[in-house]
Image (cartoon, rainbow, N blue to C red; front, side, top):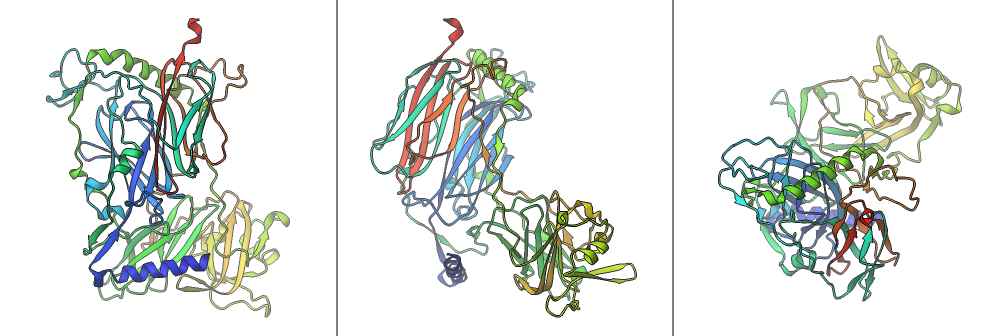
Length: 582
């Protein structure tokens, strides 16, 4: 499998190099987003799932491994930006809407680096309205009967529309409910029956209260698929945006202090520190540019880039600016005002969100523990687990008494670390690669004053070892107990950027009232009864959830695509009546 991946990668790289000769390249990728709503009040949470698909047949696209979502306001300001690692061509994210965001029109957009080669009009967009009831009015020119006023004089007055309770059916799927009317905190049993063998695919399910603040219905997967598109042919430009086909990319260039210094074939190292760390080395091209591809889900604490070699102090590092959509070309709906008839609904939602947020600690989403990634030198390195030995306070003593495959040299106040050849017992003449929690240390002096009680293990590998194009004379990898080692080194050839990293996957909170006494003293004002971005229809198991203390009409919305690219869009409704009124 690994060999096949390398062959496919080689083919793609060759194809990329041939772009200039061909003068055009095909783009067959698009995105679809299913959000839990289109209108939000401050204090609520926007939830969404992103699907990366082929433009032509809407089957999963295997090109991009990273997707981006942004919430953009009408002034082209980015309110939030999420970076998502695609798993099976899908990913899920969320955004809590704070009271600092103004009332107005926004857009939730989704894209990959590859789709940015297309026009902005083809970027997937959802029109979002946000209402901030805590916002201080900025003008007195608005209608006195308005419950929310905007800063613009010309604004559309939104009119109340009846709640749309029309079921949305699908010829291949059907929603079966144990009943249609429920009381507060009652169990709902929902089954999605497949009427054919097309259940395999990717789906997301939302159950949310609807009211007259829902001003627009978002595009369904079925409607999205009706816009059939042919493969788009891109004319090659000076800077074709390459797809992140292996995973997250981090790129930049080295800048010489002296223009006469060569910037080609200079080794640059990347460390992403943590318990599952990354360490990679690449060479610069003829213009000093470098690219790192992160093919695994490294969820480290800190990102550090360093120039390697004797001339390292002759360079600084500068990262490439992230490519972004042309926000100025996004078309927004006109500004709006809310008439007085929305006041009661707005008050109810505002109170509900305040109550839910007050009990947030009792209803938190949980982060899915990332899969452990073994170090790049595993399993051939010799590991010294210090808990198996009598501990020593300093690195010197630990090397002499425990980690005997490592050694050190001292020249005045400067130290270097080496490995000892297992067969000859001789110390290697050149220093070894030294990393601590994945962080490369080109100057190891700080380790000789470090408290070894914080260290869990020392891993030693002897002999030459290639990391990318660079060969190291052995490896000494120190793993701390918490995996959060930081270095005070701040050289010009070291860059510690604040990078946008892929969001961690979440498991969304699900209330369980099987034990009726467990939460009886905690109010439940959830308007979002269920959000599951990973619905599995192949196992035939029913989906269960519990209603809240809020009565009203709730919309059940299932969106997604079968593995053959067939869209699935189903809507149904349930009613919740206040049980205390009986």
